[in-house]
Image 1 (cartoon, helix red, strand yellow):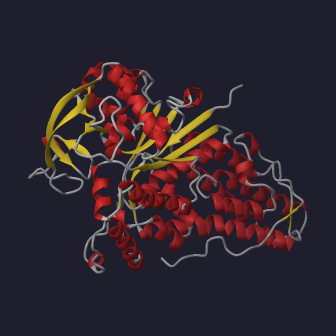
Image 2 (image 1 turned 30 degrees about the vertical axis):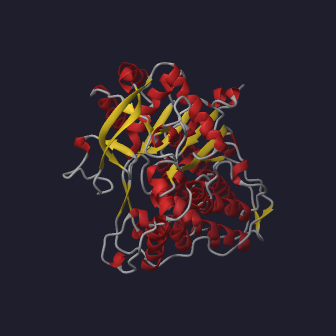
Length: 531
C-alpha cells in the first residue's frame, strides 16, 4: 500500500521585505500542517523560499551600492534566520535566483510558447513597482495611486510577450466546477470563479526594462515578469525539467497556502499556465486572511528595534519617535521581537489558535498575553506541574499506568477524533481547541478526585496514571503547534524518543503510557505574565 503524500507550500516572500508577523502567520500555519501530516505517517514535503527578481529588487540593490545577486544573497538570509528562529521545519528553501529555478522557468514557459499560448505585442498601462504588477484603472485610487502601497503607479509602454489567458476562460470554469475543493474557503473560490466569468484578458509576462530576471529562451532581449517566474518555484523544487519521475510523484497533489491579496495569481493565472504547459493544475489552494494590528500595548522598545531594522533594510531614514505618533503597522512587528518577549512556542500557538485559517484576524499584545496566561500558564503548564508534584509526593516520583476505565479515556478519544478532522480541513485553531478541551477535562478530573488529599494506593495511582496518559496524548496533539514544549512535556513524564515518533491515530489509543518510569518536576513551563 502506497504511503500518502502531502506537499505544502507557502508563498515565496519578496526579499525587499523584512520578515514580519504577517509572513510568520502563513509560514507557521504551513509548518504546523506539515508536522501534522508527518505524525500521520505521510510522506511530507514542505517548501518555502524567497522571490528575488524584478525592478524593485534591482533598484534596491543599486541604492545599496551592490549588484542584485550580492544584495539578494544577503537579504534572503533574513528569511532563513527568521524561520530558524520560529522552529520552521521546511524541507527546502527555494530562491528564484538559483540556476535550478532559471532552468525550470525557461523549460516551463518554452512549453507554453511552443504550444502557441505566448505571443509578442506591445503593452501600455499603469504599473505599480511595489506590487510588481500592471493595474487596471478600476484598481487604482484617484491620481492612479496604488491602494496597497499608496504611491502613484507609473505609465509604462513597452514590447512584451503576452500569455493568452483569455484562451483558458472556459477551461478554468470547467475546472472550478469539476473540482469544488480546489480553492478554499468557498468564499474565495467564488471570488476567483466570478473573476473568471467576468472575462479574462491576455497578460504581459516579460519585461525589457530590466535585466534582473530569468532570460526568455527564445528572445534574450526579454526577461520573464516576476510573477510568471515566481509561480514556477512550486514545480522547480520537485524536479520539473530535471527529474521527471520525482515531479510526477509530487504533482499535482500540492497544497498552496496563500494570502488573499494574491488570489488571482494563484487561482486564475497559475492553473491556466499549468494547462497551457500541458500539466495538471494544482490540486488545492487554501486562501488565508490578513492579520490586522489591534490593541495598544505593544512594547515600544521592540517596535523601535523592528522599525529601525525595516528602515535599514529598505535603505530609508528612520524617525525614532515616529512609532509613538503613527499607528503601528504589521510589517513593523518582527517574529524575533515577539519570540524574545514570549518565547517561540507561545508565539506559534497564538498565531495558530487565535485566528481561524481563512478569516481575517486581529493581532495584539493583549491577545497574545491573554492566550499565554489562560491556555498555556493556567491550563497546560498548571496541569504538568500539578501532576508531577502529586506523582512525586504520592508515588515516589514513579508514574503509574493509566486506568483503562477512566472517564478521561472517552475524553481523549473525542479529542483525537475532533483533532484529526480539524487538521484535515485546514482548521488548526479547532484542532488546538480539541486538544485544550482534553487538558481542561484532565484538570477537572483532578479537581474532582483531589488525589493530593488521598492516601497513596490503587485509587490514586489510577487517577494519576490517567492524567499522565492524557498528557502523553496532549504532547502529541499539540506538537505541530509547540514542538519544543511538547518534547519537554514528553521528557518530564518519563518517555523516551519524542512526540514526533508517535503515529496518529493508532499510537494515541488509550493506555499507551507505560508506567514505571520517572516523572520529573521542573520549573514552570509558562511563568504567568502580567496582563
